[in-house]
Amino acid sequence: MEDSDEVRRSRLETFDAALLRGLADMEAGRVVDADEVFSRLEAKYARLAIEHGERGGS
Image (cartoon, rainbow, N blue to C red):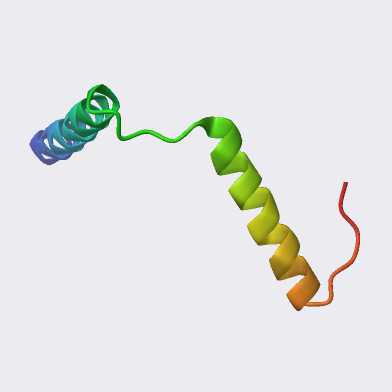
């Protein structure tokens, strides 16, 4: 049980550190609007579908 507690503690510390980095990025203005991200992803996957000859979509 001790090993699983250590693993859990380590994962929580990693998660906490990631959250703190994200908050610091947000406070420093290092963010991208979600609509911009979604538009980029949509364009990327549409291009990949065309390159691979796939048809369909929404």
